[in-house]
Length: 374
Ligand code: SOE
Image (tube, rainbow, N blue to C red; front, side, top):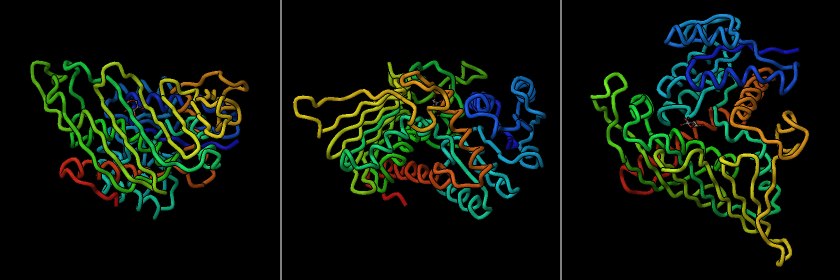
């Protein structure tokens, strides 16, 4: 039985989500490869201590440096706000640790490139938390696209809308600050859509975008009578030209009334079309133009054994998996590539490309022009 020592940094929403995923790996993927929960860090000692007790980490600390220095840690898992992702990842790589980092990888492309180069030079294994690309359905969609049976991809249209900030009274958080988050809906939500476009249809090479701030200030959580500025995009949309002649449109709105988990895409190909929405993550709609003309129509394909890692959950089609299960797959892939010392396809180089697209969209919106992703 192989184990991978985990050092988790951050005990908030995402740190808790990762911890639950680690606890689900043995029961889902079996006892041969499991995580060893060595140490968890959070700036809040109560949060770190509580998480250690609930999830079974051997130690807890308020200093992330203790995690990086821990000799029993093989893989450092970063779930802190965006501004600390790369400094921690660089320190971990230099300490010879494999690194998993939540999305987006960095505040900007320069930081992402620096961290990626250091990670690759250190020869450690890296991965980024684009969990929606881990869905067995996406592995199936990628197999259909790569098979060529629907011809070639000509157009990608994707969105990721939520209404978690539709209320003006929603309190201010680090996600509204350029210093802590850089972009807003673009990095927090559209980064997922960009990751799916990259994973399924190839790189995005040239963009033209626009952004808007709709609610310019939010109540200070420490004093709701005080208002704090919103410094980044509530809404973003951009056109792009990509690899293999693909053209596309991606948009995201973090105060889109009625949209809860509306991560969607439509992939238009020369002999068909594929439709997906995260709100129905256990199915995909496929249209085959080569069907008999009287029978042409979108077919619902349900999640089923043989698609990605689904068989580890259930042996029958249509028994649904959820968001937490995508995280279990993501963390299992992180420890498997760490144990095997093999390249994870959704690594820092992949995450750096997403940050490069984000930077290009922001530059395009600021200058009202097309920008190359370089
Ligand atoms: C925003 O509400 C958010 O938590 C994103 O930050 C996550 O990446 C996404 O998976 C769910 O929504």
